[in-house]
Structure formats: C-alpha cells, structure tokens
Length: 191
Length: 320
Image (tube, rainbow over all chains, first blue to last red; front, side, top):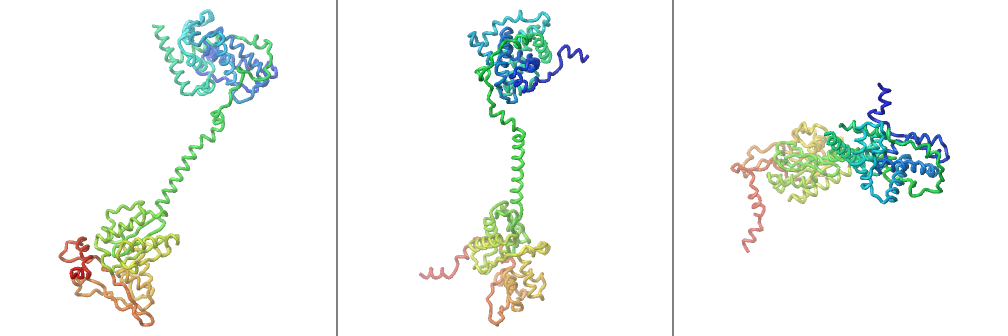
C-alpha cells in the first residue's frame, strides 16, 4: 500500500526541495555529478515555476533549458547567501521576462495562445488534463505560479513569498483565491 | 472537486509533463561568464533577510521589553505604595499621614474618634502632602479646632531617612504656620527615630508623636502614668517632655465647677520654674475638644468669622 502510494506520487504533502548550496560551487568547477544532483533535485519545481510564469509548455521547456545553461555559465560567480533556489528562480524569471519582451507579448495575451492539447501526454488522466488546462488558461500569473509551486515543490507559503518577493499575505490570498476559482470552474464544467 | 484532489491532480500532471532536458543542458557547450549579467545577477540580501538571520534574538526583544516594562511598573507601583515617611498631626484629633518617597500621601488614618469627621470626605490618595495638610487643617478649622489663638498643634515626623524626615517636618510646619493664625511657637514639631515607633500608639489610641512625648515626659516625671500623660494637651505634654526634670508640675484635675459658655473646662497649669527659680512662660493648653455652647447646635463658622473681626479696633473706628 505504501509502495503503491509512492509510485502513484500522491502523498498528502511533499517534502520541500532542499539541496546543498555547495553543489553550485562544484558546478562552477565543472563537476558533472553535482550538476546531475542539482538537476534531479530541482527539475520539477523549476519547470512548475516557469510554467506558472509563461503558461506555455513549449516556452516553459525552452526557458527551463536556458536556465540550466545559465546556471552552468555563472555558477563559479555565485556567492553563497543561504538561498540557492532563490537565485535559480531569479534566473528563470529574468529569462521568462526576456522571452516576453522578445516575442512582444504580454503575459495575458500568451494565455489565449496556449497550445496545450498537443503537449499533454496521452497517458494523462482526462480529469488531470482539464485541471491543468483550466489552471493555465483561467488563472493569472501569480495564482498559477503560487499554486504550482506549492503543489509540486512542497514549499511553504512563507518560502514561496520569499522566492516571488511578495508579502506572505498576498501569497496566501492569491493561493486561496486561485484554488476557489479553479474549483468553481471545474464544478461548472462538470455540471 | 475538493482542494486536495485538485492539488494531487496538478502534481500528477507536472510529474508527467516535466520534460527531461538533462542530456541537452549537461552536454551543451557553455561559455563561462566573466561576471554576472542581468539574467544571473544575484538578488541582494535585503534588510529583511538580515533581520531574519538574527531573528531569534530580535524575536525575544519584545518579550524582554514587556518584562522590563512590567518590572519597571511594579517597581514604580511599589515605590508609590511604600511608606517612606509618616507625619502625625495632634491637636486633639490625632491623625497619621503615610507618605511615599515622592511626598505623596498613601493613607490618612484617624487615631481617635475626634479625627474621624476631620478626615471624612478628604481625597488624599497619591495627593501631594502639602495639599492634604491644607485640607486637614481646613477641616479642623471647620470642625472648631485651632480657632483659639492659644491652640497648639503637634507635628511629628518619622522616616528612615533623616534628611527626608527633616524636610517633611519643615514642609508641614511651614504649611501649617501659614494656614493657621497661631504663633509659630505653638506649632510644635519633633522628629522621632524609627526605632522608637512601636505598636503601642495604636493600642492606646494615641499618635506616635504623643506616645513619644509621653515617654520623654515620664522619664522626667515618673510619678505620672502614661494614661495621665496621654490626656494632657499637646502643648503641656511637649513642655513637660522638654523641661528640666522636676521643674514642671501640671495640675491634672479639671475644676469641678467648669462647663458652660463662661467657664470652659481647661486644665490649669502651675508656674513653670526654671532651675534658677525664674518663671518660664508656657503655652496655654488647648481645649480637649471644641468649646461648644450648651444651647448651640454646633460650631457656627459665620459666628466665628464675625468674632474674628470683633476686636478693639472696631470701637476706635466707631468713635471716629
């Protein structure tokens, strides 16, 4: 039963993503093992974060790749501050903004152009597809990012507030508002 | 759909949708940056971060501040409520005034039945001593005391701090002398060492000032009992206490035919003789209670006021 729940990946709460800050210094010295360890630790929450920002799978994948490359390029310059994930999120956010500027689109416009259907895996449950599609299409950037980070990374609202540089009250209210909005949409769709 | 189901659905989706880009990002050629660019620049550690690092100390700061405030408040309250000095006023009514170190009154106690109406209605809690003394003296006036020019008042002060005792004695004496139309020689004062204060004054219903004078007097005149000495007017007792032993012989018997308007009950005193045989002037004793006319309902302030101006000068004015 325990094995089943682990395989299904549906524990009630996830442990927050943590990794040794010295990994970045080792990556700066071209340590491949360190990079692999970092990648395995942060890939999912980082993707969830970027997806929340851009609401586009293809663009999120591009930014994800660029973020890793930037980490490799600047890891030797990293000054330990106790919050390596904040630095990585900053890189991803800066890249996402740059993408927005380059494509001369604003975030809200990009939501309407989502081509999510093609990206969804055929193995995905129908209900999961509906949830994800509505999450990306109907919620705003803050609501998406906060819900995705909280669900996937296991970060607490306080940590998310730090990473997004927003007051914790804002994070809490956006999270609750986003979840309510999503529930309402899903209930209407089910009816 | 419940919130938990939504969260689990999102997790499952992200688990399946997260692309595996490791091969590409691990093997792509990367040129190391000579310095941070706009993308990789590290966020500056803001002040809130530095505050959070020392937060265990800072978090306790309000607790310490509250504790310090409570301690300070308790200390202040204790100082306000701790008796630092005691002032006794004796005319016939005997009143004890407890003051704190800020010369504010903590309590006013009547030491005999005559004092009860005197202090009635006087607000004294945390009021400056001088104001309370004024109120008490005013009340004594109103109740018929201190109106006789020959009246006397005894001010007794006790404090652990000798300087404070001296200050209180001076302050109260000056205050009373300014208020009362008495000769300053009729405002008697004394400072009593604290070790001489005991519970006897409370047991005997006399002030600690009278008790002190009675003790001093009995040392010099052991033939008198303490009860006899307690019954004496303060001026008599004061003079006995401060006279040379054996030179003062008060007549403690009241005249048998005393009473009424023309013959109030007063203790008659013999001459006071100094050791060299000369007469020593002494104060006339104060009546043991206000002198009332038998046919009066009580003391009339208006009559007293009229009497005050009814002197010989008026006759001269009429003659003119």
